[in-house]
Image 1 (spheres, one colour):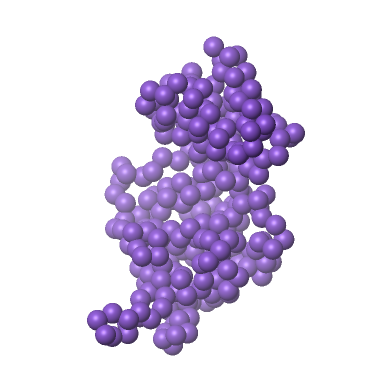
Image 2: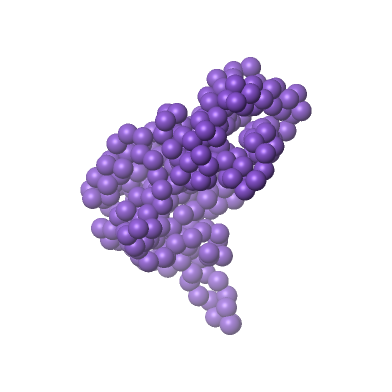
Length: 276
């Protein structure tokens, strides 16, 4: 873990340690072709649908180090590229995660890129086109990305407003992959693989997710994600009762409003009652 909260620089993942990922369509094939053609990739889809796990999976399959940056409102271009720091009386240049990834020939994943400040996307432009370069203005260095380097960004188009969206000049530099929550059969397989619970509980959780995602009369910013279903399943696997696990991992994670929570809990009760 670096000071800026990113991870990266690990050696290539060995065979047998590839993170589990349940492929939904041809996203793995497309990603591999983009990697070989040195093209950046844009992942778009709702929260908790598997975008981050997908990147981890592909980095391991391609045996490339992975540098992940969780973007936020205060993230600047300098946070990504690097800055001068004073240490032991000397001023030294410290690479940011993006510069480290370029030097290492790593896959650099910017999660929820539109959450970062606008000046960050300008830095990405020369890396995301045929130049594949990262200018470091403070040092005058021009980093040329090696063939193994790959830029991947993600965002949730359903959650963004007009002030937080990708400009066409940025979007059109990327190969775009759309993600959504898995179909029931795949989602059930993910829950079983990630939590170790049995098929019966996984089936009930998937039915619950379908019921919650159909709700249109509740004021929810986000609906239940596959990630939340896995959390609930893991709690049940550790011994917590199913209803309690669903309440703390799903309902209370989705809303702070008491009336909305009560309505969601009714859906939970109905889903598990019919599953008995």
